[in-house]
Image (cartoon, rainbow over all chains, first blue to last red; front, side, top):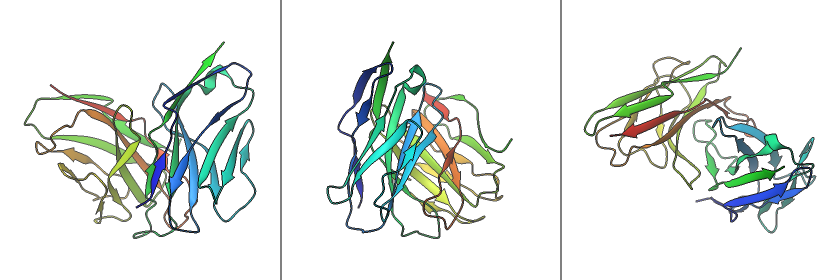
Length: 118
Length: 114
């Protein structure tokens, strides 16, 4: 079974600085999808960024970018110019392309709590 | 506005009682999911459903039950057989067949067993 590991339970960064959150995963599949979700204090889960494993180019979304290292099974999230609104729990998630009746089963990491210091 | 609603936001239950959590979506998504979130842990899948009248167990289905009588609704019942039901419960939905498409989440229900 696939597993996702986030080894940093908590991280902090100064406002306007850059921070990188780590994620590693274990799989024997060659094609899959990876996601970063944000959960602010409101607890509403929000998709931050996604990566398709067959694409070598790292995904970017404004201040958010990933460093996808397929061979190392690593999928880190970089947040540039950190803002107070970035404070949240961040979850890394894996999805296999094999579906059971078409539903998307996601496997989540344990999460990293990010604090932004003003 | 399209989205997912969950009710109630907070729920208290006495031990030995069954309780049902509501989840409704108007995104016209075929698939719906229930996750449980505990402190220091990620989300764990309880049940999921792709089509009406069909659903599958996730990783931690014991002590839970679901129904999918309508496309828009996927209620979760926490039964008295669930030994540690106090947790935060999230409902989600997605399209079917698009592997990279995102799951949309509701605001969650916090269940506390007294």
